[in-house]
Length: 386
Ligand code: DIG
Ligand code: MN
Ligand code: MN
Image 1 (tube, rainbow, N blue to C red):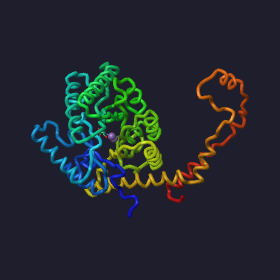
Image 2 (cartoon, rainbow, N blue to C red):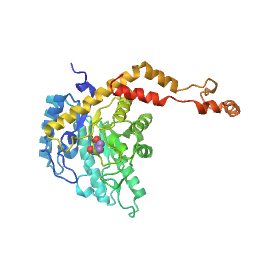
Image 3 (cartoon, rainbow, N blue to C red):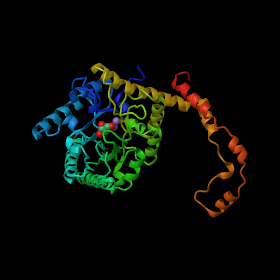
Image 4 (cartoon, rainbow, N blue to C red):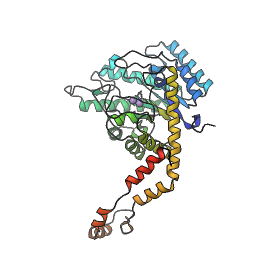
């Protein structure tokens, strides 16, 4: 039995747009044929995936008449049923149609903002019909190249109004959905609004229904911003806002590569898996795609690779937690202060004694934390020699 063979119990999911990515890029035409969503369902089920996600347009192309829409959805439901996959998350394509060229919820044209609400409510209905409990908002076109239009503050207010409106809609419909904002620093817009996990966390606090809104952090997006994804993930977990996650890989300060999970930064992937395994029980979603060079078999090798690498790193995380030398190195790294235990709440007597306390600053300065050795032990564990 292959211990790294994915199973539905691992809760791995893929967007239809990921394994269906045709290999188009800004400088070249597709290198792969389009993929029927029901075929992706069948192949992902074969590989051991748990579910699929979609943008409205991935499943029901924009402008599809209602009767055809219903036929497509019924056929997709049959495929999900036949292959035992679920749909944990759905989202809206508010970035493909040229009318969103200067934003959707943050467009300076109120008619476009209203159309974005129209399209999103219908897409939420579709997601609810297929059982999605998380609804993702990636503001692909919510940004700017020119700030002279004076909407730096208005854009945030329009974004807030739209999310509040859609929270009201979901409550009124009784869908029981939660929203997950997906930050990205740039691309396709020059500067994106809500560029990082940190900025999105602050923004959520200003919404009318903050409890309904969390985050869908993406590894590639925080990395593009020059930030640590494990640190961003920890901030989302700390705030109780990790509602979903987009896993992939990325070389820092490059365009959004959406590489196979673990393809570039194994330590980043390792600490990401460690955090998810300990603090998150939702789908492990791969928002990634095969290299443009690949044929169809390369696509499925890519998908299997994402899942296998996650499982291998989850086993490494177990070994890390059970490794006596590593755990001893962590224990000696973290020093208690027998004299400095804080009272359960602030009190003036404690503050006075702390202010009057003598510290042996020379020895505090001299102490070595042992991080080089701890990191080497971690690297050796990842290299398979521990
Ligand atoms: C890109 O990183 C975005 C879109 O693919 C989608 O809206 C979201 C869902 O994972 N990720
Ligand atoms: Mn991405
Ligand atoms: Mn994503």
